[in-house]
Amino acid sequence: MTIDLIRAKALGDIPHGFLGRRGGVSTGAYASLNVGIGSDDDPAAIAENRRRATEAVLPGAKLVGLYQVHSADAVTVIEPFDDAIRPHADALVTNRPGLALGILTADCAPVLFADAHAGVVAAAHAGWKGALGGVTDSTILAMEAIGAHRDRIVAAVGPCIARASYEVDDGFIRRFCEADPENERFFADGRAVENRGDHYQFDLEAYVVSRLAVAGIGRIEALGLDTYTAKDEGDDRFFSYRRATHRSEPSYGRQISIIGL
Image (tube, rainbow, N blue to C red; front, side, top):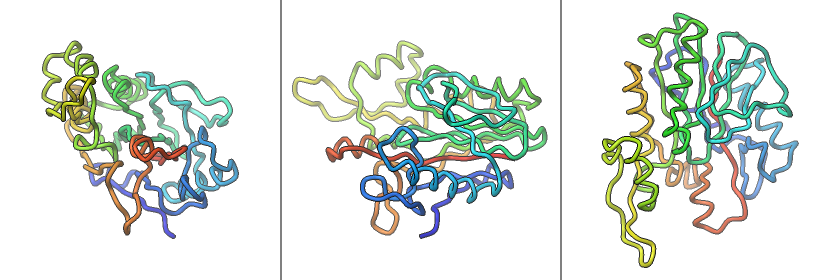
């Protein structure tokens, strides 16, 4: 089974890919391209899946990842580091060839960046908390620090949970509106749940795109793929934390998004 490799036109010839869950060796709830080191999957299967993912995007490169903590922190990578000492952060930036920057998701938004002229690329993990905290802004600043120019940076927002699948409560919407009253536009009225208050549908992808645009990124591509509902030949195309929770499944895998030089 071939790997499901999704590319963004905005990133052009820069080696990159948003990967689905097809093309790996894991089985059961983790079938098949689970790359989540933190999952309870077979470590040997995870290692093979990570190798396959890297080779599909940038053959011969060293995959570099993070211990993701839903922060706004970005790390500049100048040499490979071992998985055992992954920094606690949520974005990676480099100008060094041969490094494959990898971000793991299972509903959060993966964002890949590039300034092809400067030879600077980045990958960010934007869940609601990191997105609200400014992880994309931190990534852009880190790119500029090693030679990128904001007006040349392009960005692509990969598969993430869509508004129709992302129900949140009134406490959630308050966090966003307290940060900026304009954020109300990213929420649609949801169903009222007895004894739980009003619920809303949050558009994570649109929020991330807006943050990028406000930051001055002129070319932004949103793939519009819902990790909760998307299918691949009848099977779930992506891993989804929320879907696994709703189905009372014991665990869930993670997909990866990669960019490099």
